[in-house]
Length: 539
Image 1 (cartoon, rainbow, N blue to C red):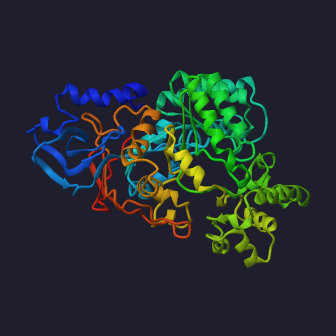
Image 2 (spheres, rainbow, N blue to C red):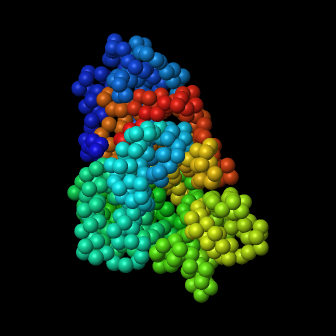
Image 3 (cartoon, rainbow, N blue to C red):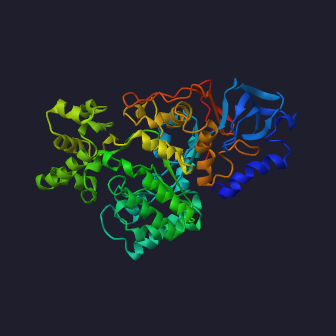
């Protein structure tokens, strides 16, 4: 189980470590170290991750940790010339869906190439355990250790997964026996190293839980000072009520709250964004430990099954397909789907991004309007047919947000950027679908487009949002800052050229400007190219 530290202690430790060793962390002229290092990163502008102005100097790395910062000489097995570029702590993706993808792409291509050195899975109520191949987070972690990974890994336990394992897939109340078993399983996973619990209350079967049921589980999380991350029950017409519910549950359980991918979806709700911020700020003033995250794009990604009402999504896949094949139930489902498409602004705003059936692969990358022209079907008959043929497993992208709100959320002191995506790759199995471009570009886009080009904030503050802010939420003891004694998770990037290249039409493209990435001192990206060396651990 990883070491943790309080948020205040986390920030304080960055100052104490340098001072205690007499290393003059903030004054490189005072530093002189003659010991030989494994690696020195020299000639760079060091952004420590605390939001303060950068300092000129070098970083000495020994045995995977930062050993010195400042004027440290040149005694090292290897020297990396930063060439005047920014030297930053590795980026931390607090909301990822990598999960099992790490076993398909151990490097974590789309993540490591954008500077992400720590990746947190198990979001939106869905974790890789305790089910299937992995009976516990410990099993999941152990398999990652055996294989090795390009970045550091941690995971939440998903409340939806927990309910599925104990209660099942149907919309039924959890009994006292169910609650006892879920709480016992949850406590065991927290003991084994889960960082907290997530909910995905727009997805089944987690959505079938009552507020009271979730609060009882959160009380267990609170005992371990874990984090509660929630994909709220609604992100459009009832989003204000959903924020209120999330805050209410966290307060009742005494747990820290992270609102996932905060948004006010669909044009008729865009005006609500400032009110959501007011609700969050009010909760913070009242003493709730609360923050939120957001990806830097105006489109979301989810499953096409969201066009099926929640009640009709219960049960097995075969039972859902039977409802889609039944003309009476399909008619009612279709009315719901058509209304939801209308709220999204029309079929042209929904893009198909995955298909497994060979004859359906032609639809990947096309919006529903284009698919309808190709097939001669109306939107609902096409969606219904595709869901049946693909056994309800189809990914989609929906364009339903506006730039003004993206900037509002990203610029707020409690907000931080995320990918909300699993690791992907331009080669192999993971290249077959069209992921949201955020899988490849979120962090470079945030720093390049929003911080540099649109001047949403200065680079120091932007880097803080990518590093020490998420690290403090996760209570990671030795990551998120460049300070002596911390793990050498480091990104060297060109602040003038860093930008995302991935697009909705061509998402499998690595970002520009990422020159070097080190994970626990292991040089994983060298001059923009993977070295083949993997340094990731369980963070």
